[in-house]
Image (cartoon, rainbow, N blue to C red; front, side, top):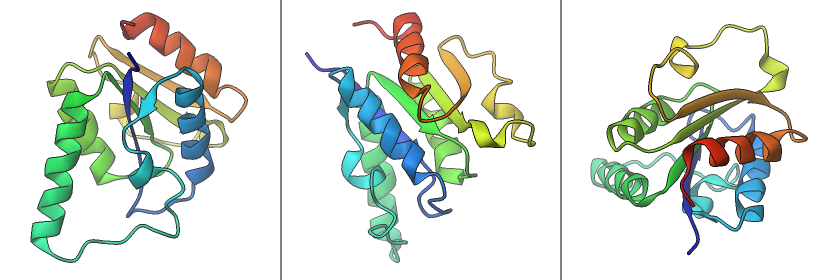
Length: 148
């Protein structure tokens, strides 16, 4: 059985780290896992739209919460601030999901939210990454927190 990964990152807030999101998706799939959010998160810089109706926006939230509940683990690219990713993290934690948050290595030394590494949640890992280290970080996270 394939494990399901809910992959998230900044969308409406900007796509400056889309290459990282794409590399993370490839690493997840290399492990034989399914990226549940691939159509909405990967390679979307030119596709994403800011949904204009409240009904559409509520549908997105309802769908994403369902996907989080159905996922085996969460991976978030958190180099660019995103209210949505913060909400998804909190919801995933409330569902007792293992969470990996990744921030690009080029941002080391810059200020970031205490919520990225200050949590006491027991199924949580935070790491700086670059495209050469994603696989090893993901494998360490999976080994420690995700039952296969």
